[in-house]
Image 1 (cartoon, rainbow, N blue to C red):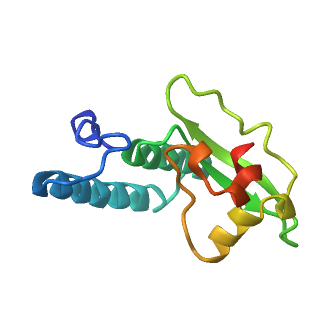
Image 2 (cartoon, rainbow, N blue to C red):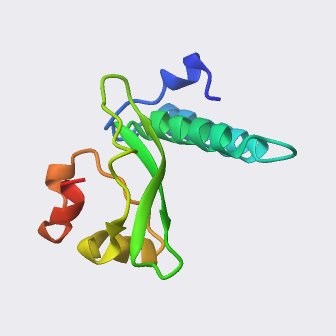
Length: 135
């Protein structure tokens, strides 16, 4: 888990500009990667490890929520299996099930290209991402 003092060095929607900010960011990222990796070693409760990891990634990246979606074997449907939400953000994990993948072409294309989907403001996403904005 990212310690409270480390969380304070990560600023939401802030561009890292100074050398110290860059060093702090990379240190936090390395700590996060190590922490997440160690959660999945040995006998662990996978759901707890996934939820804690989503929380830590959400805090480090300064987003209001982070998700994990699982696709059906035929890739036609996707289900939100895990979600972390920042304080005062309502969870949607129980509402985002059996979503037709074809409704989200922009999102699917990002995933096919190996990209993370992260936005500080969903309203600023390209118009082809309209269905994603509605999530």
